[in-house]
Amino acid sequence: MPLPKLLGRAKPADPDHVGEPQLAPIEAAAEAGLTVVDWIDERTALSPGVRWLMFRKVPKGINWAYTLGSATLFAFLNQAVTGVFLAMYYRPDVAGGAYESIRNINDNVFLGQFVHGMHKWGASVMIILIFMHMGRVFFFGAYKYPRELTWIIGVVLLILTMAMGFTGYLLPFDQRSYWATIVGVNINNTGPFIGPYLGDFLRAGPEFGATTLSRFYAIHMLLIPGIMAALIGFHLYLVTKLGISAPPWVKAHEPEAVTEYVEV
Amino acid sequence: MNQAEKEQYLREYSLLKNEGKPFFPYAVAKDSMMAVIVMIVIMVLSLLFGAELGPKVNPTTTTYVPRPDWYFFFLFEVLRVMKNVPKFTPFATLGVPTLCMIMLFLLPLYDRNPERLITRRPIALAAGLATIACIAFLTYSGASTGSPNQVTLPPPSGLSASQRATFTAGEVVVGESGCLGCHVIGDNGNNGPGPPLTHVGEILRPGAIASTLRNPTAPMPSFKGLATQSPKKFENLVQFLSMLQ
Image (cartoon, rainbow over all chains, first blue to last red; front, side):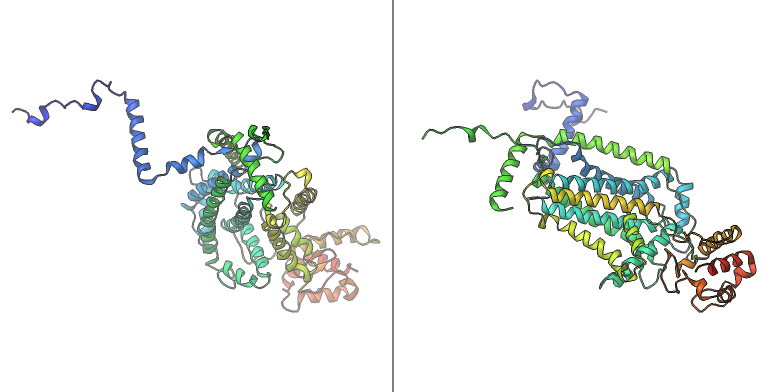
């Protein structure tokens, strides 16, 4: 049977590309990648934003102390990723479940204790880094005009990080975490005006009960991380918008035009 | 900062920025190296120390000594030091931390000095170093403090060797029995709801102490069980308390 005419016919030459060599596979792949990027950019117009974020200049004199902020962000990401894996196995059940599920993570789950340890020690590392970052900003005077709001958001992030440490401490539900949380909530209770309400909110009632653990879990893995992610985004927007502060001892060269003599 | 100082700063900053390098790849490279170091440190800590799990929770115990994580030790220590002055306890637990938090929060609003170089900001330098020293000291003493269930009282002078041994044995029983939850003995324990026991030996004779331990006034628990199960411990406890004069 003869082939249909359409299949048998040779492809007509593209008038725009006559005589051009065929693309090698790797070049074709690169070409395809660019096409995808162009396709997305045509619809989102993200490329000016990316250029604004990545190709902005950082002032001269930047040193290693300036990496502490991004290191804190990285520790936060470590907490987020390891936290997701722990949440896959954790059961916030007071009546037998919480403690056993952490036992299971530690003893049976593949690399369970390693990931649990990374979450636990990552918290300490994050606290150290956030304090060092704050110390750098304080001693370099980087919180001054125009970066006041960046500092204030940073302080809120510090408090939220401490709150993460407090709420996360209960979750393994061993003796230490239970009693430390009882003490912590009782301290909150002694506060003026809102103290008793805050204590009741944390405990989900006047006494430490069955829903307290799931409440701490929800605060620890949904409420505070959500607020923190939003505030980190705002913090980074301000850092990019206002520029990274220069070390206070670095002086700029006066541009030529200013020192030029003008004959009068 | 007034308007002229603001404009001066922005002008100098834009010059410095123009002399600088692009964020990508220079700053990104440094940040990535730092991220790798952070990752390695976290992994090594996890491999070395793991995440050990303590004994399962037991809400009925009265002698467990709760400890916070190390980064709350400074708050814990403020609380520990202030607990014997009940009037000021809320001040210590919430007043001081809240005040520090507000001071930190509002820092850029009250520090309006345009100078940024730390050597020309003596007050900021002193305040910063003092804060670091305070937190370091409180964290250290919070970490090294003993258990609150422990009595650290020197034996009174003029005791025979066997009396001194009874005294030390009684101290241990007091710690185990959780007496310090409600009674103060010397520098240890909570002042209330029970009466202070620092000089209880002056008020009660050993027989009276023993009968009070057996049939106490509520809410104090009875130590009848201890008296029947281990009479030796009970005797040490009574002797220890009667020696507190």
